[in-house]
Length: 97
Image 1 (cartoon, rainbow, N blue to C red):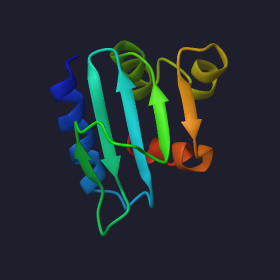
Image 2: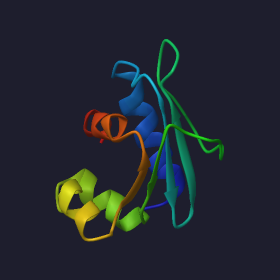
Image 3: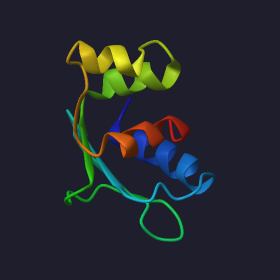
Image 4: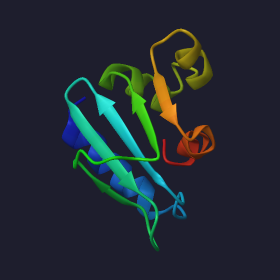
């Protein structure tokens, strides 16, 4: 999966969900995806800005979590996903994935 595919998918999901009331940055092996949910709607971009929560993983692991092939909690415990910042905000990602 390519970064552009992930951005398009997250844009679609973000528009159909309520604002996440914060900002999340995915640091992936091929780039960055930034979700700004501080306004009236969630906005997805590839800008590398400071975020309330930063999630570091690979595109492959993100795809596995999206498909249900990788449990997010297990991914964090095994180091496949690293989270820095607001854990409550990270939990809101389930609605976007």
